[in-house]
Length: 114
Length: 115
Image 1 (tube, each protein chain N blue to C red):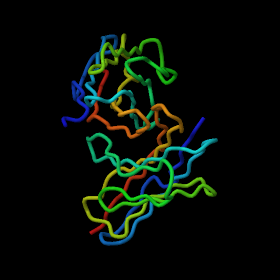
Image 2 (image 1 turned 90 degrees about the vertical axis):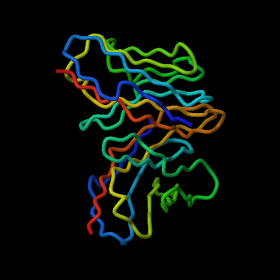
Image 3 (image 1 turned 60 degrees about the vertical axis):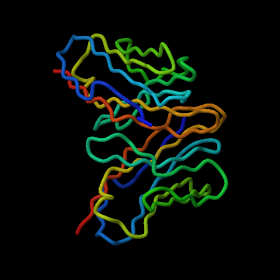
């Protein structure tokens, strides 16, 4: 099992640019989560999907953030336009569902906005 | 809304000594509780979980945790730590229920192992 795959692992961009983070969940998992980790705020849930449908996006900080899950094996988190305060590590996690609430995390994408 | 408190930001333990990391949660119903470990530059790895049943749960790498409803606690323990246990440890709570739900994490405890 390859685990949760995230790309890119590192992203450096200039303020105002569009950034797209990608995630491939574990095959067969029904739920997908996007988290953000910063020194100041720790780990925060941004949005999650069940069966490709967004369930709760209340953690998305602003309209500049958007997430999609077009199919069961792919999700994107987009920031447009990016700002320096968006610099963080973004984690994707997936969960089997069906009563199993364990979440399996990817290695994360470290985003730096200059 | 649920919340998690990890009162210790840093803990230093000698190799071979016992370890206890504290976690207190706030949630109105029966929670799902987790401990994760994060090594530098890595993602989070699940150590153990509590959903229901026996309040003492065993996890990987020799860790265990005890759920105490009366104290709203879920402390992580290990009888003898190894240098490789140095990492960041996160306690998390999820809402009960049939569907998957996002987790609320504590701020983490940084574990330092002295030789």
